Picture 1: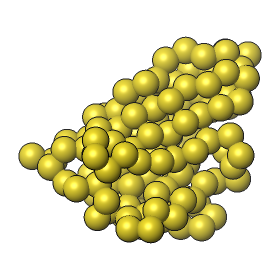
Picture 2 (picture 1 turned 30 degrees about the vertical axis):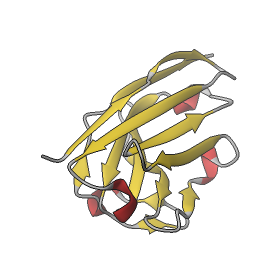
Picture 3 (picture 1 turned 135 degrees about the vertical axis):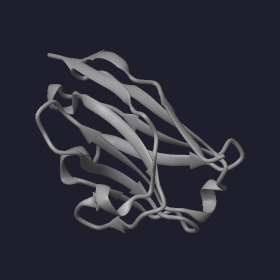
Length: 126
C-alpha cells in the first residue's frame, strides 16, 4: 500500500532551522521523482524542491535556493527537506509528493504529481 507520511514540522523562529521527513512505503523511492510542496493560507500550492530519480538531480524555487536542501536516504526510503535561515514567508503546510516531473524553474507542478502525503505544518515566527 502506497503511503507518504510527513513529519518534522513545527514552530521555529526566523533564522532558525527545521528538517522535514517524508517516509515512503509501497514504492522504492530511488525509482521516482519526489518533491516537496507548500501551501500558505490563501495561496495556491507551490513546488519548493524536487529530487529526480536515479542520479538525484535537485531543483529549487528561487526563494529557497541556498537555504533549503532536499536529499534522500534510500535505505530508509525517506526524503528530507532541510530548511535553514527560515523566514516568516516560509510558513505553510508542507507536503511531499511522488511520481511527477522535476522542473528547472518551478521545481515541480502540483498537477503533475500523483501520490501525496497529508502534510506537516511549518510556522515561522518573526
